[in-house]
Image (tube, helix red, strand yellow):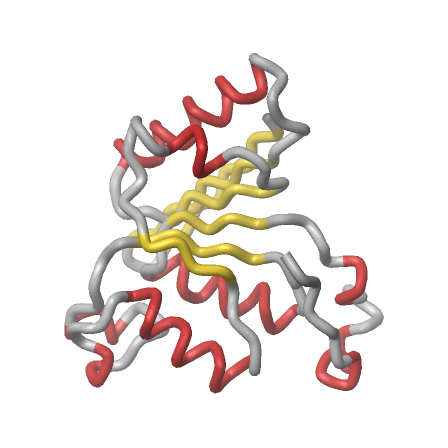
Length: 164
């Protein structure tokens, strides 16, 4: 993957907090909904240069209230709508993987990331991600992976971090 050129003028107000030239970890966000869409935006705004987003779903009108999308995005894939929104807000975009994660493709999909963020809307996929990452670490095929399990409901959010 070609490393994007970073325009430090975009990040001048946050350089004391985080230098974007140091934000090079490979990050995977699984899910492009309420948590995943805003997380992708925040990471790109911070200057993270190696963000990948995985999702297979389409935008529905009711997503406009809590996700990065508007009602005009209804019917588009979340990844296409996210690409449109992020290019307008950050002038950059993550890598997109249009895929429904399952037990057959999870190992090959999750391997090689430094940080994996579970931003899905069901416990089954979160369990799958955790178990695959745990298995990858046990067989020694990956370096240390930080697993973030972010959950949200109503006016509460919880984030669990697990160094694998």
